[in-house]
Image 1 (cartoon, rainbow, N blue to C red):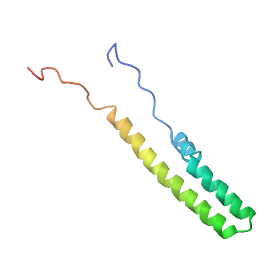
Image 2 (cartoon, one colour; image 1 turned 30 degrees about the vertical axis):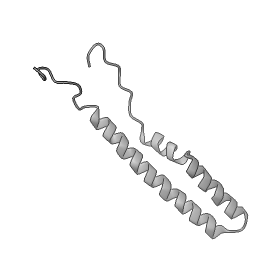
Image 3 (spheres, one colour; image 1 turned 45 degrees about the vertical axis):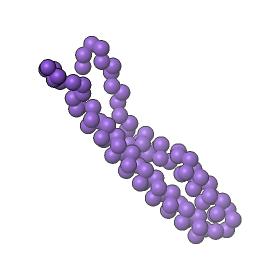
Image 4 (cartoon, one colour; image 1 turned 180 degrees about the vertical axis):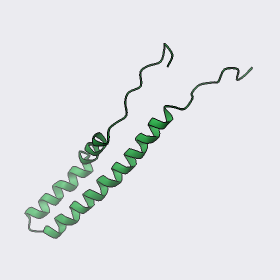
Length: 87
């Protein structure tokens, strides 16, 4: 790292990625709908909504984790114009 380079922030942890998925608007909406369905006497509907919530959170977690891995790997790649290029 040269003198003019900024320090790189650390990547997000697995727990931070999981927390982001659970706190997402869609996840909270599905959780509220499941609670409402259970309160109205529809436990099967509530279970289906909770299963949908779990699948949604898992898919989002996998995609975010892969993206975070790509970001971490790409930090090691060279950037800029190599010396001597364009002469």
